Image 1 (cartoon, rainbow, N blue to C red):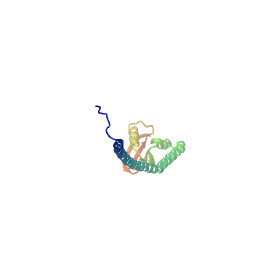
Image 2: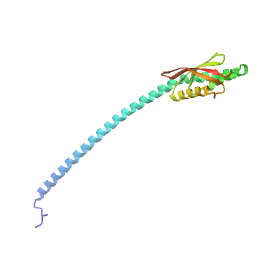
Image 3: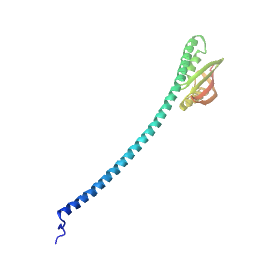
Image 4: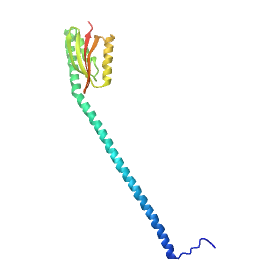
Length: 181
């Protein structure tokens, strides 16, 4: 005899099929709930991570804004002093042999260096003071001092760094520059 003979009546067959469908339906619902819970946890986790990351980015951005806002007045004063030194240099060039030196003081430092003061000390020297907001600017100031002391500058013979200190705006320096006579 064949093993495929169905000895169950129709009602029993229907009841077994219904029981199988209920079991499959129950497993399907459990899987859907499990996947939904995992998806919800992932969405909440990613959302929290994005909020934390955006807070850090916002904080860094605000720090940068503050640093750039602090540079504004110093750069303006530096440019004003350099402009005044150029004008005085032009006027003095016609009347005074140190006129070229006044102009050279205005051009001595790159734009990154904020020149706060340049005073004619006595015959043959200037006192200069400024702020360097970046480490790259400090390297440039050191390079300028080295070039002057090695005789590579046409207006100055020697430059002595009198003071160098750190403050929140950057590296503050004071120096004396001696003119070639």
